[in-house]
Length: 149
Image (cartoon, rainbow, N blue to C red):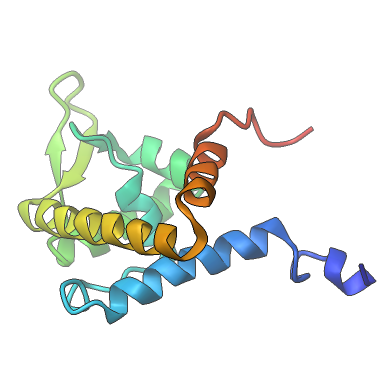
């Protein structure tokens, strides 16, 4: 392996391969006639939407999950509200807390995206084998422990 291949951008970098795999799914969704009309999300918007709990998530918790400041998350939620993908409601347990959840449009688009992604997983299994796809799923859903040393 050359020194360049051992860097973050090296050809065998797991981080780079994961990003490329994510882009494969993203590009396939953009090319699919059933999902091409769905709004294109930034990486942070996507991370925010997939970090939502079904019954709503506080902005503070979303910021922690996505790895941004509360201020940045407030801005992100505002953008997603303008796009009608999320809505905020008062927490039933604490009136000081606003919960963010998918709107009706957000849930509809989420359902369409889930169906399309299931089809893409099948297509990927046809190309690289079901055992490889299952192995990827198992490895990525395993408990990796906390990051760091």
